[in-house]
Length: 277
Image 1: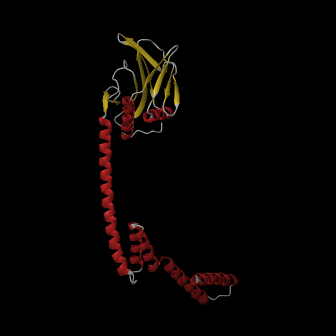
Image 2 (image 1 turned 180 degrees about the vertical axis):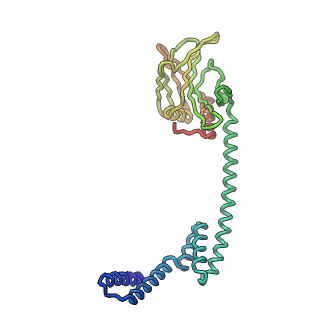
Image 3 (image 1 turned 135 degrees about the vertical axis):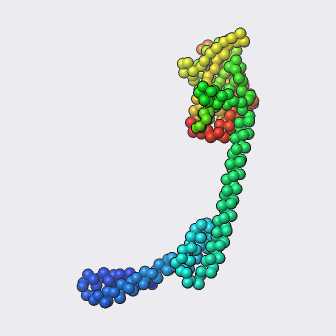
């Protein structure tokens, strides 16, 4: 504080004397030299060997070894004759060793994370079957418990993925019966809430054969459907109502279907899929 006050006084004095024209060249040089000397002393207080060593020790305590090494190296380069040099060199060696240990630990953690992610991906897709569309160059993934044909009832997800880029999800409800419903909407009742999915013209496709009739709804996943699926998975009892033009049909979502939903979501995220639809 005393040095700073002296520097300020000399600066004011220099400015005042020069402004009044009352200082000789010799006096000006003396005052300027004193000013420079005080600046150096202030720098030493702020960035001198004592301060640099102190800051380095704080960094060491905080395990910021790169910063500690930088502070110590500055001390060694700027003040090679300081009595702190021996201690600074010892601390540099310690800091370098700790930096190396950290680097090895980081590399090991990186390799372990990469291995864990690979295993996670393998385990996630292990529960799925896939079909490759060589025309569009898309691989379609389905849970192994999901019906392969539309003639079976189902409430499920599936996903597509090209060779590059992220996968995408699709949501599908399949109805099978002996009588047409001409489905116009669905109601899904979980333990926590009730959701209505209204369909647009042409979204519900139909077909029939000797074994019955089939109606299915197949759309791209969005945030609302994602939240419905998450609620379905965690609910103990889930009822699904297919509402047709005149009639409706109810059924309970099975545990097998819930697990299939979860398996697809796990694989979807493992393959890099985003849940921000």
